[in-house]
Image (cartoon, rainbow, N blue to C red; front, side):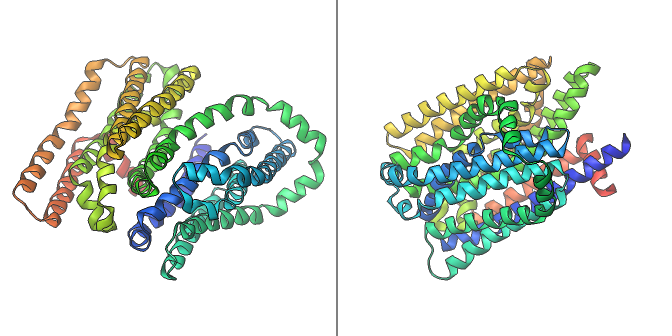
Length: 485
């Protein structure tokens, strides 16, 4: 048992290290890219990503999830073959659809600059869909080291191509899109290459049309249920991009894309790691009768990590963005101010939503996804009707904070956590931001320089985490395990 636990930890560390380094490369390159490419170029990239991400997620009809399930590799290779065949079929089908509908839709979204690049949508879906399927295949084979290296290759290639095109004097949305697809292609080809020999050996022995059809029927619940849940979730995440483009221009999309990317990517990376641990511990705690303690501990940990830095962004984001990304990205900082409260509630609730599965209440998750999608339609549509991009994001953030806040409350109550405990944790972790915010407001009113304000914020952030590290045993144990490993 101990050996298996150690192996799991090592596998998780391998995958986590590659993902972290890939994100570091993306974040470090961002200040350079924002000086080479303008907001409109990032806006076109945002629209392209929003479109292809939705299509990619359903290109294999979610059969890629079933690759992990068969006991024998002989059956799994048929599921993989089925998935890859569906991705190819979807990509080919998208060619005439894109030719017929792409231009009218691009014009409707005020994104005429996207029209020359519409032909790349099927290409991106093809590589992205293959990448999804191959990721699950290599996860099944426990090739986590390869997956880690591949993610690093994908990020490095994308950034390298985007920088190269930018420095070549062609800083357009097409350059950013080319970098995106180059990274997908390199990653997909690399994963196919390292697994080619073993996959072909299995394919020659076991792959057949009849067995693929049997897999199609055997795992039919994945397209029947998972496709719709995935569509709702993915569309709801991409809605702000489409609404901003429809009511305004790709420039506003670019501001949103950068602001959202800067705070969402690291939070998603941290949140997914916490979610994995929480799922395992909550599953055990449900039978041990300690679920309440696990949920409270996780909630306190999430609030400790996120509340102070995200609320700090409300006071410094525009100045921070102007300094790091360039003066023309000041508005992206304003968008980040507006999004920070929503990101906090999303970060808190997302990892703990695994409790729905632990308690076998998956229908709650489906209802929540539907509620989020509907509320975002209303909030974004109202902001667009009133003619203000900032107001649109205010409504979007408020609706998101309300729903994700409600979700957090439902999760805590389902685990038997009292409201008083929730309020107590929020107050203990929240009062430092009142002092920090007050100090920053005073400095701004005295017309202190932007650099001094940012340095003050950095010192406050360091003091906050130093205090939390001194008082939180959970953080102390985490650091001890890190150094021990």
